[in-house]
Amino acid sequence: MANTIFLDSNLHDINILDLPEEVALNIFSYLSATELSCSTAKVCTLWREYSGAFHLWRCLDHIVDGTRSKPQEVSVFQTASAFRKLTLKDNTNLGCLLPLLFCNCTSIQELGISGEDIDPQVLADIAKIAVCGQWGSSLLNAPL
Image (tube, rainbow, N blue to C red):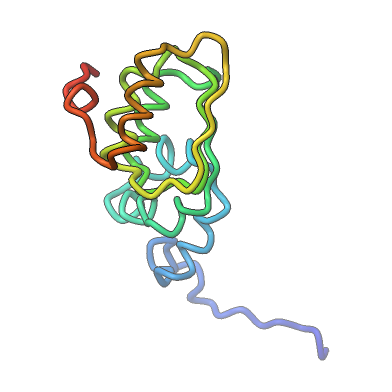
């Protein structure tokens, strides 16, 4: 009987939204960037707020490699407040992602770029931002 656990009969009245914020954020910390932005952020206002928590994103590494659709990548960059490391391997969606990246994810610690088909203008824009620390008007005005 020492290992017996007695459950309160009122447990069925507990809602996941009643979890303390720190517990919910701990659970969310196990999710990927795509799961945070494309799934949990769309459940309700509270989960959207949790999904955008800075400390969740600053631990994430994200790779743009063409495996996610354009709407999924856009959703990731709209939700993201930070990335620890970002790797750009696919040129397909970079034109629409860079403005979101440089407006929303300003605390990237490591940016990796690889691939033969990366547009030279994209590289020039990234280099300009890295050197001067300012967002170029060509990035901010790029069409989505």
